[in-house]
Amino acid sequence: MITDPIADYLTRIRNAVMAKHRLVEVQSSNIKKDMTKILFEKGYILNYKFEEENNPGVIKIALKYHPETKLPAINKLERASRPGLRKYADAKSLPRVLNGLGVAIISTSQGVMTDKEARKLNIGGEVLCYVS
Image 1 (tube, rainbow, N blue to C red):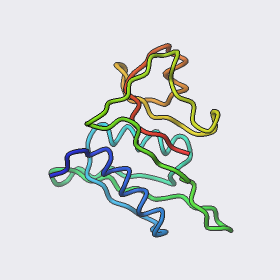
Image 2 (cartoon, rainbow, N blue to C red):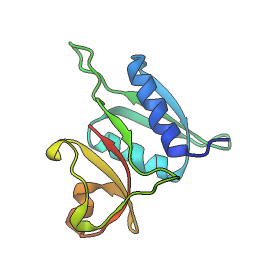
Image 3 (cartoon, rainbow, N blue to C red):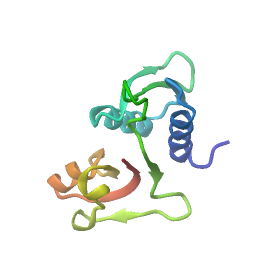
Image 4 (tube, helix red, strand yellow):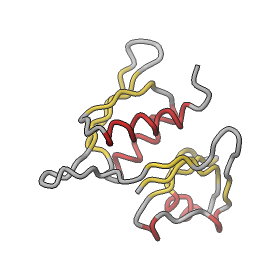
């Protein structure tokens, strides 16, 4: 049994990037789906597919690499809040990753979103992870 499914999700992606895999499969949940959509919208992954045939479902993620240098689009993927130490931030103290070049994924009362979207809506929440 996995005690922290979000950390498992991030670790699977991080390990696949380090091993230069093209595709990674992760067990599905609503929060992981939202995080995957954010990674796709911000250009960190190439594509994704939700498969719900079996229970639990699977998320297939196609990782993105530079065509010439083969460097991954994801340089750093770090868990911020964890079950033993939750990290919350209000709208004024939301973290900035790489001075705005990276993305912090925040779980708010209005759903999972990036730090920039949360700042625009003036809401805070739990800081899930940092991506750069």
